[in-house]
Every structure is written in C-alpha cells, then in structure tokens.
Image (cartoon, rainbow, N blue to C red; front, side):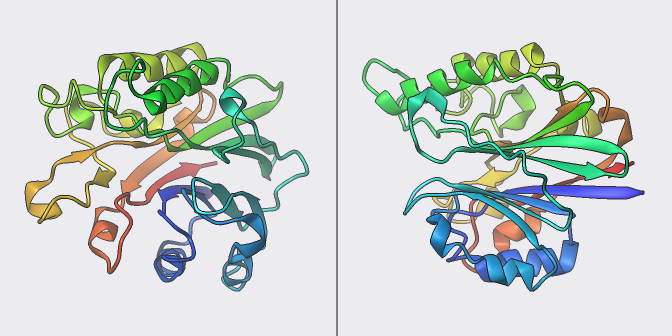
Length: 268
C-alpha cells in the first residue's frame, strides 16, 4: 500500500498558505513537513489544513524566523519531541511518531541554519552555529529506538555531493557546498546509519536541485540550483521506496518559495 511524505521549506506559511493548500489538494501526501514557517504556534493556520483532511498537526514555531511543522492525515502519537540544538531555542527541530499498519516510524523534521555568507567561523558566528549544529546531529541514529523505523527530512542547507550543485568547482568556497560542510553532513549520514533516499532513487551523476536563488533574473533558464532539501531513512525502509519527486514547477508559482517540495513514496 503506498505511503507518501513531502518536505518543503515554505519561507512563511501564512504568506504562502494558498500555495500549500494547492499542493495538498493536487498531490495529497500523507504527511507534509514544512520548514521556515516564520510563525508563532498560536498563529499557525491549523484550521486551513484540517479543512483539507490533515487533522493531526505538530508545530515548533516562533515569531518571524525559522520554525517547523508536521501536518498529517495519520494520527501522530504522544511521543513528539522538540530538541534544542546548540542550546539555542530557535525552533529548528521537531520529531513525531506515527504508525502505518504494523510499522511505527519516528519522523524528524529539520531546518538546519543557513550559515550566513562567509565560510569562516572566526568572522561569521552564523557559520560557526551551523557547524556546531551539524556536529550535534551526528548523535542522531536511525536505529535509536528498538522496533521503530526512522525518516529524517528537511532543509539541511547543505548540498553534499558534486552533482547536488550546478557547479562543483565554482561553489567550493560558497556556504552550503564547502568541504567542511559537505564532509560534516556526510558524517551525519554515515554515523547515524541513514540512507539518502533521493540519491538511492536517482544516483549521481544525475543533477538534483531543490532550491533556486531569488537573485536569479531567470532562475529556470540559468538553472543554477542546489540540493538543499533531503529525505533520509533507516535501512529497513529503503527497499520500500518506490519513487522520489522534486516538484520543480513550484518554483514558478506566483510568489513562490525559493525551495520546492520533495515527495517520497513508499510501498509498505
């Protein structure tokens, strides 16, 4: 039986609520994980999602910045968790547990710090924060809970592989693709026994992008993208992956996010 999960950095859920509603009506994933909601919990537009059949909602938000939310057709059990990374209360993590048939799954929803412009922590505190955040993520293991599978999604703000960016050579000194970041994220993946489902479905050297800068006059013609959004899982779920879709067309919608939805479908 198919099951689908989507991740999308929406860059303000209230501003782009019509886009999210259109996406849910048209693609109807079982669960949608949003990042950069930029919304305190009490102002989150939960009723709009409940009206579309997404009755189960967990939120970790704050005013004006960051924020993650998980919106589900399936019941979310009372085992949600909101971790503070680097000891900073900046609403960047949310995990929930859901059941699909006999299978229980822990779902992590992340918004990793972008890191600013200069890839040097001695002059850029934001970059140091990002590196520290990634270091803490290395302690997150896909098999941490006995009998519970794991999925990790979100805007991880790092394009780790050569073909995750439009030009590997030109971006080696650009935040999101510097060696210290890409090696750090690769270490999170390997130390936690995670499987990169997007690259399982479409291996290198195929180019994969989920983000296109607002600065590009014609983002589609230039196609200077990066794969900043990710879907990982524990090894037991990986054989059940049937497809991954990157909804590139969403970047061309009216008043879009600079990220697009990514949908993973499993045959469970």
